[in-house]
Length: 272
Image 1 (cartoon, rainbow, N blue to C red):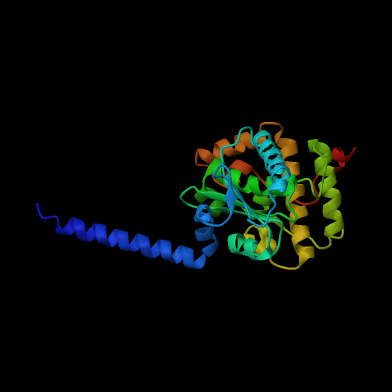
Image 2 (tube, rainbow, N blue to C red):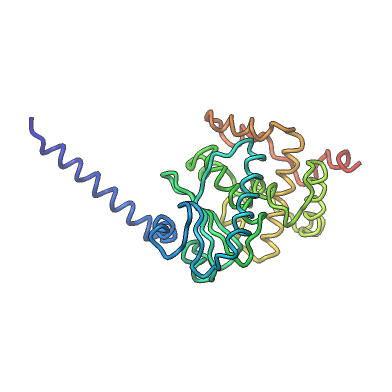
């Protein structure tokens, strides 16, 4: 049997894979840096949590506590945690930019098609809310898959879910009060709806974060209000039903149901 054709095909596939990975790392170098974090000067005790060499070991305990509390929130909200991202805690803006490809924000998250995931944090602004927010993004990837999340989940829903674990803007935990609080914030940031953002206009990451701080905050409050409303009327197992339907192949639109307009017909009843 002539093995030449098989060798040629194998060589072609390997070459294509190398070119693909090279292009990926060229376009997104932060992924490469994250993948090689174990070879960096960052310190780790367990291969999961990595500390910048500029962070004093005396601070490890409080930083670990923030991570543990965030993991507990994710576990409770998603009714079990599937993801297990590596946590990279940076001390300087240069380190943060290397692993996050940004100089702004307190944290970011990176998920890969091959299953590895990372949460990158700025030690200066790190707290349980920030960690839980980023972990929520990674958990959604773990629950329904990288492809479905990146191609079918709108950014407003992804951010809205993360806000349910992030109490920097709204501290209320009870669903009804949480929705009312987000509606109040939404009214403030949209000037009572005069600067309305439609959900369809903040469906991609670029649309959500493009613009000034006012736009981004309005996008966050729009997402928080919509998702908190959805969870309120979906009841306790609503998120689990949604995830199950997505896992079984449903589209986002079918699993989520009709999105509600910003001036909900039920808002008066809820506020009573």
